[in-house]
Image 1 (cartoon, rainbow, N blue to C red):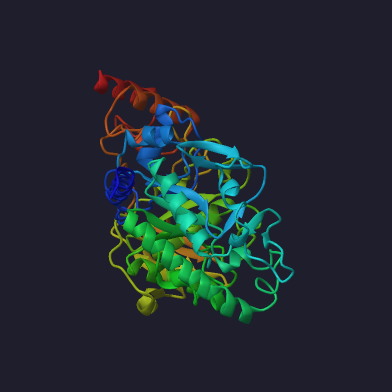
Image 2 (image 1 turned 120 degrees about the vertical axis):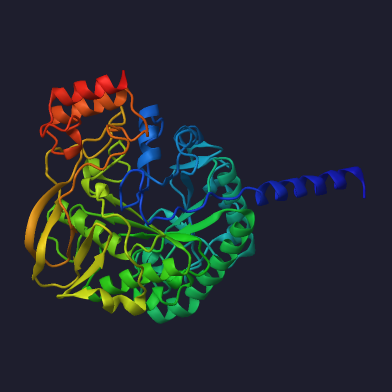
Amino acid sequence: MNLRKRLSVLTVLMLVSAVSLHGARPFPQTVYDSTHHRSIFIFSDQLHSNLSQSEARFAATHYIGTQKMPLADINRIRSFNESFLHLHYKLGVTVDSIVDYGMIINGNWFSENRSPLSNWGQVRIHADWFLLNRQGQWTVHGGRRMVMDISNTGFREWWVNSCIQEMTGNSCDGVFADTYTVPALYGNTTYPELFGNSTATTLADWIPKLNDYGAYVYTRLDSAGFYFFPNIDNLQTTWADSRCHFWTGDSIHGAMMESWGNWASSTDAMQGIQQAVTIQHNGKFIHGEGYFGDGSHQLNPDLSDPERRMWLAGTYLLCNQGHMALSMYGTDWKGLGMSGNPLWFPEYEIDLGPFKSTWTAMTISQLLWNGVLKRDYEKGFVVVNISSSNISLNLGGTFWLAEDPLTTSQYWSDENGVEKVSLAWREVTSLTMKPFTAAVLLNQEPGCTIEPKGDFDGSGSLDVRDVIALLRSIASGAQDACLDYNEDGRWNILDVVALLLKIV
């Protein structure tokens, strides 16, 4: 073997070794966050770039992970939490053709989509990689994304190899493969014979290819030490979903269930809930991403935003088996990637302690209680009405109902890492639940559970930032027992003074 060949072989072996030693960060056990006293775990779909130190600290202490961040930002977050997950973003079965399409390449945003360095620039020179429709033309999705021939060996190898390169250059643990499922394409391509006119044709000609492609990507990424984490939608298209590899968690490490809670009927809701549980019991991680803005709650469009958010949080608490995270987005400044701030809603502060037991799709009947689904936690319980009727509940005792007190419109952390949301707790003995709503109730009147006491910025220690956070919260009129730092039954400037004296 000549020197050049030896060097080539050595280079390949070094690359293989480097990849195999990568080792993705483990998904966290999402049973209970005893440090911050939270029963809901949040995965942020997207944060803005150039985070301040305070924003990075907030993200590190409030989220378990995020997607598509520049390397400098993810390193800044991990300086506060080394276990913080980071997923790369890449379209799963399509490639976007627009001129300005942003992706993270080599650790930074790159949007020159006509460059040979872009994904589009790399695939467009391979005519045989594109899926052709009945007219022999490229299959276009949504007027801009080209559907690829996922059975083509060259495309498959490029997708995985380019993905590994992009993830390695940006300290990622895995890839979020978006626009992956049949519902994502169906009725919105220039190939209606395959994606719109006949379910039988889709079942016969596309889904087997998708299953084979998913198994290939999963195996390759798994051996390289990265997660395969596709978008599998909300699992209500039974004719397609139940025939796909991810239905019970096969050939994935985890998945996003987008439009979490936005099912079309009671039957669909039950199906989505059961499958989320089944996938977790197969050892895979679920990220439920729900939306609560206009038109995003088909089941009951008359609900207020707080009611919609509680539905999303309540169904999460019902389904979480210790392998699930949640995120919620509304419209305008509460929308995905629109606010420019790390979003944080009152429901994220729910402290029910850990759930008392797990359940499976086979045992969901055990959760039935007076016409609703009820799941017990250490400190209380969650009830979910997945019917289209009002249900009146006699609770059989006194409990405390979680509500948004509506004392602030700032549902985010500011540039100083301070958020102003809180929960209010109303004493109740009965409850009337609207169709497709959820409620969280505590067994005992809640007190302050911040540890250490006075750690208002969530950093784990006391400093002047906590004093500033306390002062701002009191000035905003927030209603929170934790603000009574000196325990005199009130929250005012004397609490600020007491905390300042503790620090100095």
